[in-house]
Image (cartoon, rainbow, N blue to C red; front, side):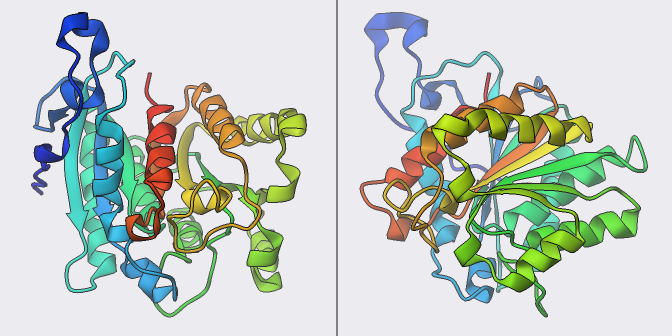
Length: 312
């Protein structure tokens, strides 16, 4: 499968007088091609069909473009090669086909030694990302122990006739059951008032580990670190996904379902970095950016910063 990146999106300030130490993302990134040195590969799922099916406000298909624009002018502090591996689009509302194509693209990137960082799009990206990682790992071991760590106000464990942005982690659970793999899912920032009792019961049946948004404060961040430590003890590989609606609406207005409470950006970034420091991270993504609902690009800028925090 060939996905062509739009490198025209990568523009920004140039500080020639300050030399190589003044590079920005748009000056470091290269278009992805086969047989390049292993690095970080950005790959988008330009889709909001899942949000539409989940009765949300559409527009997330523009998320990957907005994230690239927000990343472009950031100062570059990394050392690894950085590639734009393009976007997989959703054609004729075929969400399942888009997820399958995206998973195949991710699996190929992983096969070549890259760290894929996904750009959403609705949270339907999660099932596609996990599928790509699992398909890659299962070429090496039949039952890989993958931990799914989700920063999210919602469990996204819904039962529905069609897949949507509200079903990805139930789909992951079903994938694991079919493949006889353990389903290890942790969700940080859950809003009790935005998940029905049925969803909490589903989470209990599936042994989902979670912390409520009101349990995640700066004065108790050590408890969240302990949550992550305990979670990571049971897995060999980490897939991390950050749904931007985990943040307060004042920080992240550009999402389908803004949070009245949410978890502060500083805590989310700290914990994402903390989980990454385990050395187990193999795939990560940002989901639910809706640029049409954003204010002064706040949400896009936060999404870009969170992605940047995962690169060393």
